[in-house]
Length: 383
Image (tube, rainbow, N blue to C red; front, side, top):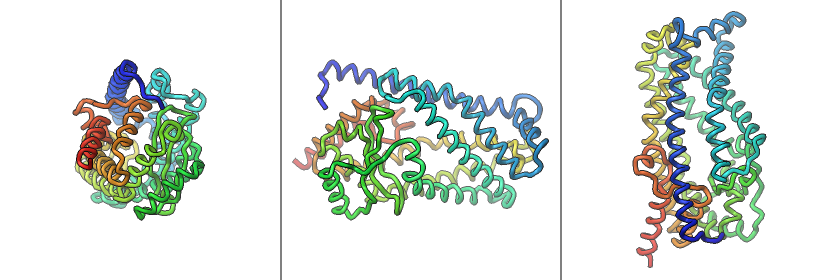
């Protein structure tokens, strides 16, 4: 891919700044919008708000408590996703096309939203059933058992995602470039990292952005390379990308993220358990086993998620930096690492130097500029 001249590069950086700023504002709007929706659902109107009325309507034709939980959580999920659809359209479809990043048709985008809805529906019903089961069985220690359920579900999801969920949205095939495949597998074997294989992911049908990922646990562990990455990057740059992904495997970052996320989840659930019952009763509900109080629980967890977001982002950036250092050591190719970062910034319209506060709060990767500086420092040390 030809390097852009200085004027086009400056224009691209200005576009990236604008694109980043819009997404930051959309993130803030999404937070406010979600809180307002839950507040309107629970606190406006008669005691218990519309949530209590919805449950009363469900109880009018269904006497089984567990079916009531499923129907209520399903309707709640449907209403929430429907209310967020305009924001989702603006950020996920309109904005991506406006900045010439998307190649996806509206029909394809709508199809993906339909698949996401079904997955979210199944997930929310599963979570709600488990949650109310533990509310019933362990009124004081429910948070502990829900945390165990959450971590267990995360492990299962990490295992099945590359074989059952991701193929719903993208097409996959084994990497066809035999020379590159041999080179990449040799690197994995040299590092004693066992992977199922290296697969090409068809990103170009939906986006111009380039990406790669590690996915799976145990018998589903694999490396995924976007076809946009394979098209725009040379073999040496792709080797740098793979070395970064192998670094995640080498240091067992997936397991670290599961354990760290589990610890944060346990902490959040425990804190919510201290206030949820009183908050539910003061909001007009019978207590934690009252199905109509479910949005109050979700609101509590939503607030905790926002508070803990910088902690999660900081920890993830530490792991990404470790994987970067691993890639530099294994390839000893800082120049290719730097060119890779610059191409990724260009293709993905990434802000190379976000505001430090924005990076701290929202970014799960170090900034492009800091990653390039680290590679330049490596080059000097190993000259």
